[in-house]
Image 1 (cartoon, one colour):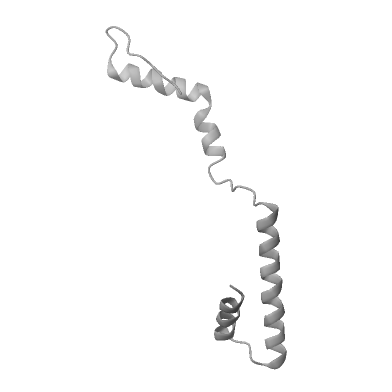
Image 2: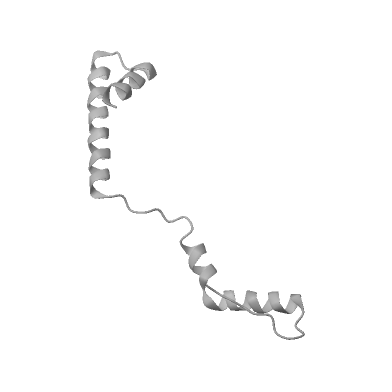
Length: 83
């Protein structure tokens, strides 16, 4: 944490300027901006569950397409059934 104490006879503007300079020199803002949109890596279990879910849905969709019964309503029903 960055702390700046007011010096004797220091104006508020110079205090803010000194604080801003210390923040820039510390590199905190650069680090935060760089990692702002970084996503956390998913665990192996989560990735496996997602992959299994997708394969089940694809299998059902392909089966319905072959039968000529696939539409948006059928897709909703598949997702409800699997969840």
